[in-house]
Image 1: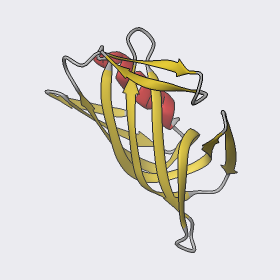
Image 2: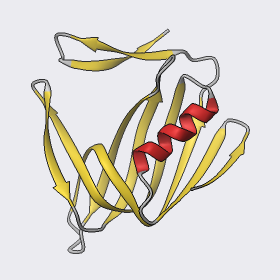
Image 3: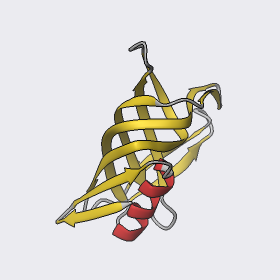
Length: 138
């Protein structure tokens, strides 16, 4: 992973085989911030997406490479960082689909931007009614 920082912006370049979620988490930990916004694009392989329904994920695993059309997400956490990232991907027939990124590896290259929001303190707290940990801003 290559990484560069300028003010509140972090730019990551992931190479073939690097874990996307772990790389984003590492950058978040290094930033010492409790609220970050993530965006990016590239290609992805060996990934799993989730659709959240009634307290659990309906998953779809894709072992083959896809275009990574977009990464959008929030990294929150006071103490332990929590990643909430959604992606849109397209297969070689140009069919697009997306969901919550549960795991995935960069294929060829990924370009990811992370914006640090200073002065915002956030956590994720379990909401029993929704059956999911939701963002809590303090």
